[in-house]
Length: 233
Image (tube, rainbow, N blue to C red):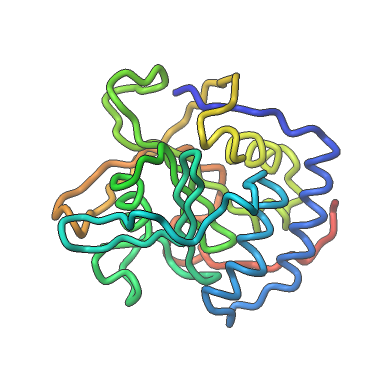
């Protein structure tokens, strides 16, 4: 599949690595969602990924709806991206008490994407980041009839390993220009894995195809957050 791409310059990658190391060194697994948004997610969106603070809104007018159910993403970017956040370390793949209409946080973010005029969404708990596209029949990057495709990045793993290449890919793929369709270049992304996402509102299952940059499992032993122990930036 072809992914919109905007090259991250080496000095930007270094700056991002230093900033992320500082952010995750200060992170606390006891933080609630609002603290995670304010101290991790919002700075990454606005400082590293180029989402304008003036345009990044916590309210939508009109409110998104599915039948009589109101849908309220954490952030909406008018040029075409919805963003769903959870507290640091929260699972994105299973049910939690604050997503009662949904089977998982992935389902929640994808449902907001379906209901909005956005073309993409970000789903994150601060360290685990998914960028997901909804495809249409005339999309030039659509392959094999996939309705949703995306990429997963583990930023705590990237920082811990001093992995400049994967950080460069995160910055080049998940910036606001790419996720709102404004990038003028695409690159071929291969090695997609599939994951069935149960849909709470639709009582169905959607297949998500995503390129996984992380060696850590999606769930179970070993998936948890690890603060950095090195400063290789």
